[in-house]
Image (cartoon, rainbow, N blue to C red; front, side, top):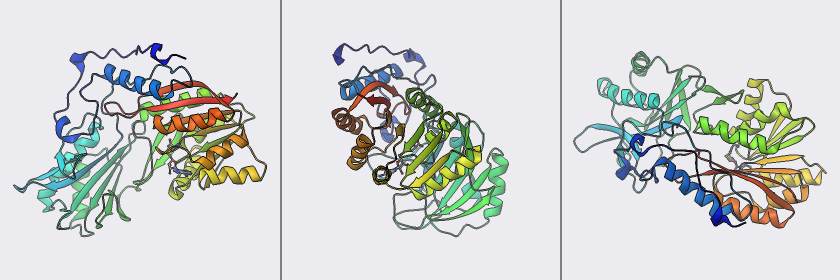
Length: 397
Ligand code: SAH
């Protein structure tokens, strides 16, 4: 079809007057689209998806957010000291390794930001300093906060550059007094020269070291390191679309490929005969099994393997699934995975992607090998950034 003629109207009439401008936008660089109104951002993302995927099918109107601010449920702040000796907390500048002092970010959860500011203010009264990466001295390196928007549970991870945390019990007490909403506090030690936020060792100082969150009727356990979608509101929109496209039947076997902590498969489990999840990350697979138990789901199994190799093995055993939902990382699916998918020939494939460029490449292969694209739905998971998520439905041509 002629993609140029595609209707580019969006429902989002956020008035320019209501748009908030971030005072840090020039230094931070995290929000690439801050100079556009929200409506313009949606046009921009829609045009990007049409350009990349419009050749396969008409692209449905992008689903944006009604209130595109403070959507991030996971917030991390780096700590440092100015030349004048003042402790600052904020975001690493995207172009350098300098910390931009930020107390309130337009994308981040407000409660998480308030907790981080409180921690910074508490430090001097406990004679605690910020860590200095260059000379590898000092104490607090990062703070990570995760909040369950539905459950209300809040996790705070204090990341120290050393394991010496004097008066930690009193510090925890003081923080809880200021923020009784915190449900768990963890001390993580990261003394390595690394850009990773979390180190390997950790000690739970308060609560049970994890939070649970709900998504479309299922419960999920979130630990400091586990991957969880950062925009819970739009994740429900995205996954509901994926399930709508899959049109699951009670007799179906669903393969959830690149399943992470099992999110998509578990919310689909009550609609199908059984779910098989495959995921490379061992910890995530453990979480997925735990999450199935939390919600009382008995018809889902999870395997730790490369998604491509897993499909090959199943093919050799003569096993195929009726529907495949795949949600690969930015690099897209591997060639062996796609080859097996074509040979296994499930009736329907729903492809959730966070990178329309690699999705275009994979769709080219699949449409040359027996699949037809039936629907394309972009969803704005990350307002103010250049990223866009898409759900594509394919069936055997
Ligand atoms: N569907 C999940 C996770 C999507 S992120 C959710 O929405 O929460 C993509 C996942 O693919 C990550 O968990 C990553 O660990 C996993 N992954 C990356 N390469 C893989 C591979 N070759 N085989 C299987 N899983 C892989």
